[in-house]
Image (cartoon, rainbow, N blue to C red; front, side, top):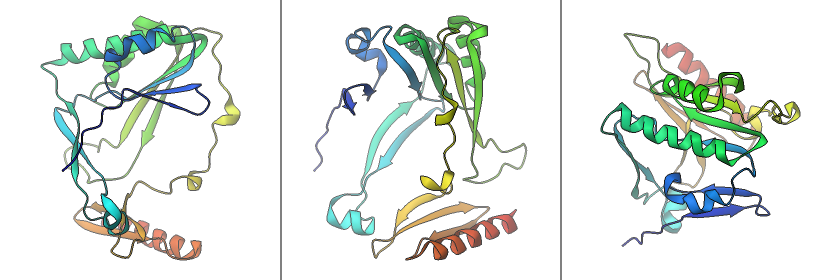
Length: 232
């Protein structure tokens, strides 16, 4: 019914950007050719959750209009024998990133609470403690709330420079949130083909639908936020 498609790499733009799909350790020939030529490396490795992940994709004309059918496909397995095995993977990725970077280059390493402390120590060792620039905290509100501790509602992105001559353009940082995404709700499609956002929190189901006008969208979004505040 379905055909497996393997993609080893994808080049976007004018060939200046390279997106590797899959295990970077298996792409050594492609990466070795870029040694010392890369301005920025962004790594989003497994988080050592111990889970097997899947993803759903809308299929066919009906799927894109109504959201059904939406088959489930395997994504990746995030399981390791132990912490040592995971750290070996992480070390190999960080070392590879350093080899790729220009003297002006930087590394962005995206992790969460499970492994960010290990990664900080590895990056300090490989890049040098004085090459640490930022610990960027990406906070979000989706999902439920923990009852026995503060909810773990953030990811961590470590930023390290290849050298003191690194490039950083502050003018490229500010982006209005509304230009690309308004919240952390899950995007869905209703039976009429219209997009809407939803979230389930504290056993409350919240749905925000963007109608014909931005004003309608804003009112419904504010209403959803009000419901979320009351649920706390």
